[in-house]
Image (cartoon, rainbow, N blue to C red; front, side, top):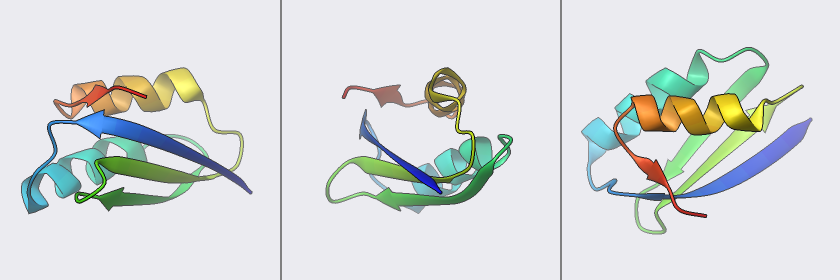
Length: 67
């Protein structure tokens, strides 16, 4: 099981959580997406995770990976 953590700018509400979880959760191999608004963090758990695809999905949701 792989775990990746991303710092994401611009998330502030439940809509943000739903948007990011919806986009990232569709990706192959993803089993869980945890969004921590207070820390501006997204943690993705799964097998064979594609870093570029995760970053693109966060972008598609309308937010920017900053770290």
